[in-house]
Length: 374
Length: 260
Image 1 (cartoon, each protein chain N blue to C red):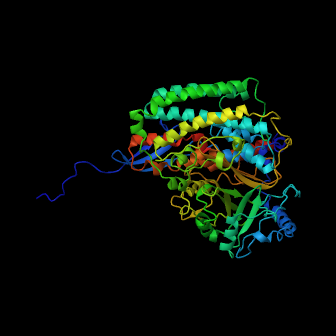
Image 2 (cartoon, each protein chain N blue to C red):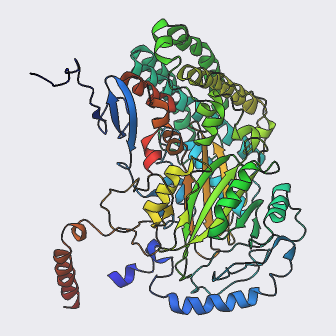
Image 3 (spheres, each protein chain N blue to C red):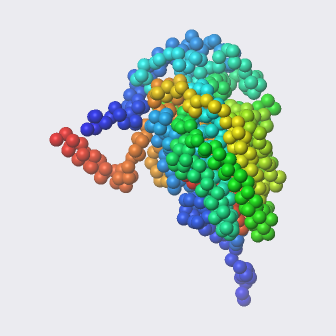
């Protein structure tokens, strides 16, 4: 007599699969170990560190002025923002007042950089989900920004565009006019992405109600930048703790309501419009004057420590620097990497979703592995 | 060749880790000099059960005024707040709530830092998150600083906090050692999870009660903690990991060839 229990029709064991580190949709060398129940994600473990270069240790062994160059290599899609954060932190330690013109140009560079970073994001995010055209459009406009940066500082990716106390160079003649022309082009081209995505049925199906996180929860897990604002939290370092010339600029903070992938997309697109608005204001009000302040040749901040935050395209980038007042390099150099802190929320966001949604969620967090691993 | 290179190599800007002993004496001297300075801002200091913790050197509030000897290994500056700076509401609330916790405040370029003993860390963290004057709901950053000159509890673990509602910042600092674990603040701020893992990875500070204390950036079988001051900048090299005996033999051969 057969007393065995009837066999279930399907095997319900959990399946562990590895996404990455070589995977086209993980934007670099991100590895996610997924535990699956069928197509559903039960849990995810993020494995990082494949691109770890010891940036912090390296910076503790370089001169204060040499570090600007290393900060380029962290978030290489938004180098100018990294430069700005570092220079301002050292200026805060030195209690140094940056000339007004330099602060304005820095604001313009930071906003151009935000546009470039968001363009890369919208292109690659859409391509991950399957819309390849947007990628080509977005990189076409990013090229114009890189041209502007090339004209300003000679480099197209790692700019080394700021100095402690100001900027290395004044803006070239007619550069301002080109920036304003670019702003017009950008405002014309933005609707092109929206036509392709915003009301696209496939896009809506793939992004709505995917990776939802509420505002209080987003704060608790340490999200910052557009992902936090998409959950309805009005938190922007540019408004809350103004730096550069943001206290003299008029701009709005776009907020989401649902905290899903679609809202994060809408928030970033609106941020691009606001960036254009800031660039136009700063360009119109660009004051005359010196581009760099009188900085001592040998920079040696007095003994002390500080934390200074900036709004990078990815979120809050903070520099915590300790000076011992004696050495020509920082005693402790620490970056609060926004990509790293935002990536921490990935397991929480993907739980319960389909494997295909993991791609969408990794894209929506907007990570750069160079910054996650440093 | 090597002798010519050493003064220029940036790795030698730092005092060599092999000389902590004269440094410890120096530190004692400087803190003795600093002693007349400390009682002045006694407003912000609540003395109490500090236990066996060595007192950090106090730099005068001006900062750049004094020039200590170049050879002294650095100790944390932690300047006490000058008397003319008004304390924000959250500092006053903190002093009132923990009169016997031995809190020390420091103030530099507009940033407030509170130094807490490890045993009261979680209480202070919960208070700062929940008190209506503080509401520090956002844990920006967790990091550590290595002060090898301080032989006992050589690490400062630093928590950078921000309040998304009241829009102010504070830092909590606590002393940790290789054998002195710090309670994890992940129950208070889940955001500290990966940041504490990174501190554990880079400095070897242990966090008790952490849900998942593993290395995060370095490989799991890595030896040593790279952000410590006595860890070489160029790393241990690959050979030392694979076969330490080989490495020793090679090193001896190099030294012998240099002597010849």
